[in-house]
Every structure is written in C-alpha cells, then in structure tokens.
Image (cartoon, rainbow, N blue to C red; front, side):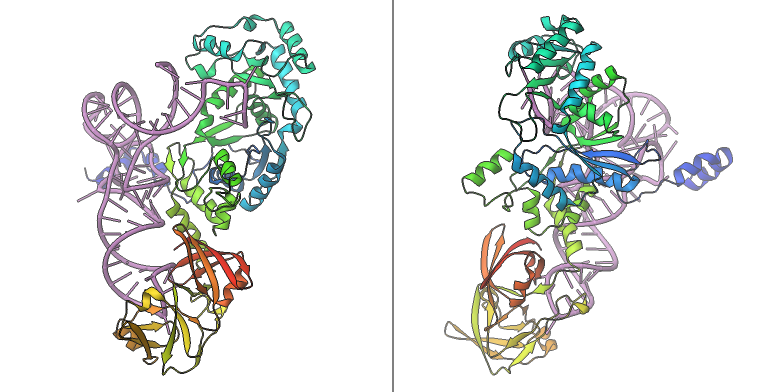
Length: 501
RNA sequence: GCUGCUAUAGUGUAGGGGCCAAUCAUGCCGGCCUUUCACGCCGGCGACUGGGGUUCGAAUCCCCAUAGCAGCACCA
C-alpha cells in the first residue's frame, strides 16, 4: 500500500488513531512537564555558597526558571549552607550578585542555616519511627562493613537508645567525627551507595557565619525535608544527584511523603576555562588571575566581563535542555546566541591594529560619517575628520596596491624603494570595487585613542575611535574584527575584551 | 569491584514502531546583498555506536557488546 492508501484505509477502520498523530507538533523550548497543578509548579535553585556561580550553575538555574515562567508558581532560591567548612561570608554576597545578574524570577529565598531546628525536629521523628539510628562507629570501620554488606552494632539499637544518643550528640557530648546519624535502609542493598547513609554529623570548626551550631544535617536529609516542606513539585538537577534522589526516597517513604518529579540532566564539559573553585582560588591568590571575573575563568562574572549577556547564556542553556546525555558545552553556540542579541544594538567603531601613520598626497580635507549601526539608521553616525594624515592597519596596507578607507576615499599605494607612498585616488566607490581594493578601517591622526583589545590569543594593541570611550561596560562591534566589551576607560586608554566575531 | 544512567551530523537538539533516503539551530562551503570578512537572503555539506533479536516493518522495543558518565563521604 502507498502511504495514501494506508491512510485512507485507516480512516475507514480507526479514524481516531489518525488524530493523535496529527497534533504532534514541535514547539520551541523545553518539553512540557507532566503533573502540573492549577497553581503551577514549585521549583528551586539550590547552590551552596562555596564560591561564585559558573556556567554549570547557569544551566541548572535557567532550566528551572524556564518552567516556572512557563507554568507559573514559585521559584525558590535555597542556599544550601550546611557545611561550615565550605561556607564563607563573602560568598553569600557573590551568590546574590550572580543571581541578580542571571535575572531569575525568584519568589523566595531560603537559607538552610536558618532551618536547623526543623531538621532536628524531623530527625527526631525519623529516629522515633525507627527510620534512623545513631552510629558511633569509626567511619572507616563502617565503610568496610558496609561494603561487605554487614551491619554495625549500632544498627540494632532500640529507638529509645538512639534518641538518648541523639540528645547526647546535640548536647555536645561527642566530638567531631565520633558520631553520626544514619538512615536505616538496607545494609545488603545491591547498590553500595544506598546502604545506611549518614544524615547528621558534628562540625566543631570553623564556626558557621550565620548560625551557632555543632550538629549539621547532611544534604540528603535537609534537601528531602525542605523539598517536602517547601512544596516542591519538580526538581531539575544534575545526574550527579541521581543516587541522592534514590537515597532521599528512603526518607520520603519513612515519612509517607509523596516525592516531587525529578529530572537529572547529564554532565556538561566546558573547555577553555577554569571551573574548579579550588583552582580558581589558588590562581587568584598567586596572581595568575586578576580576580573572580578574570576572563580565563568560567564564572558568570567572567562571562559577563567578556561581553555575554545573561539572556544569551539563558538561550544557549535552554537550547541544550535537560537531556541525560553528557555533552560538551559549545562556545560557538553561545557566540551565536550572543550575536543574535548584540548585533542589532551594538554600535560600530573602527579599531586599527598595528597602526601606521600615513600622509595621503593630494587628498582633500573632509569628515567621514560612518553609521553607528547600518541596520539602525536612527542610531546616527560618527564623525571622523580627515586632515591629511591618518592611521591605517599596518598589515592591510602592505598587502594591497590600492585600498579604500571606509567612508572616506581611495588611496593608491606605490613604493619608493621600501617606503610606501600614498596618493589620493578619488572617492568613487565603484572604482574601488572595480579595482578590488579592500575597504579598510582607519582613524584620524588627531582623534585616535590607545586601545588594548584582549583576545584569547593575547592582547592586541592598537587605536580606536574616541567614541568608544563613552561605551564603558557596553558591547561594541569593531568593524571586521568582532564584538568586544569595553571594560575600562581611562583618560588616554581603552581596554576591551574580545567576545566573538 | 559493586550500582545506575546515557549513546542521532564538528557542536547542541527534535523524533519514543510505518509520515525518517531523519528536525531545527550552530558550524563549514558556495552564491546574493552590502562602503564591516557583521547582519540579512538563497543553495549545499554533514548523523541514528556495533552485533543479535522481536515485528510485515526498528533511529524508535528487547538482549549483548563497546564507549562515556555518575554514585558507592560524618561535601553539595
């Protein structure tokens, strides 16, 4: 049968089958979520304040943000600061700055360090119903027993005994590392990661910047309790948490709570930038990097400094989606996403690398008026006066017999021995085209500013238009070079970071 | 070692038994437009990891292999 015949046949036999196939249509964006109630969704972004946010965090935060925007509901920023060893005062500030930059639609901010009493309360409940026990075994000893599927003696304590130990733990009778609370799962579970994992421990030092405590929950407990109490409907996080989800399931089951719906996206490798907090910290302290926003780093601060907008990062991340496949983050795709946003609005300027001063014989004085943006005439023009001498890019004038200085005129290049001689060759654009003269950028002798363009291959020094000085913090396009963010402007110097072509 | 997840063009992604000689984006190549090698437009290149099985029919379901990744912390 031909497809048409089949279709006709099916129409006779079971027309309803035809319908559902028809409506399969692809829409832009992420796949729809199931189990969305009338109130929308409740989702969360849960970083820990151990350093600045980086591209990996952008993915997690934007995926969740996408669905909250899509369905409405709540987006909770939950700061997971239950490990005093990894939490530092300044990190909270940086975290909030980064959140601000991302432009997330956050509805509530929750600090886990404010909620220790809640975790204690639920821990006591869990112990009371026999779901957890207090273990005083040495961690190493326990690990070996666990790997051999052998229970430790503490596992047989009655709940009363566990409660007694728990209170002693709370009261300060035990030192760091000598006592822990474990969920009673299945010591013979085929997956060693599931066997009686810890949910509380003692940390003596350093003190926590936001609370006064010695007994801290481990993430599997605080996360499970919070996700339930805060009403999470869907959780999107990396696949490194896939085992944690299964561990948390034991806690949900003991309490009889329904679980949220989980998605675990795959690992994203990112080339070309430093991502590990420890490596960044070390590099900064040794002076290899200028700070958290050093462009060699993968932090959001660095990305921003290089001229990428949060919107571009968002678009790139939504395009990547929530697949479980491990992927390589593609800078090229981010470049394209950023270009789409920045090209319509970035003002154009001339940048001249390796500038050579050229006096043009026989040329009339005039003022060139190139557009700030050829696609947006309303943006206006720049005014570049020519008074007899200009700067031209060294490489370009040594490889051509004739050039056209953009928006100015044509120049013929002859040689007197090794020294080039420049003569005015008319203003006809048609003629320049006929002669295949390259149209190149230039700068007035009297109106050029020193400019360092930082590229991945190192800094390029040259000159740029004075107008660039008014663009600090903005992204401009250096014609025929690419987009760059104007980072710093001083009286006689501009520093810019190359973003992409 | 044990447990689990994944496998579509260079990169990212859609497709979850027949509409797939496989979508879209990006990239690359060619052309057009253009006083930027930008933007825009037109055309082209490029992929279902391998092997078995189920089925009339498999990118899609099952098994095995291979590869990658994750977890097995008193971190998150």
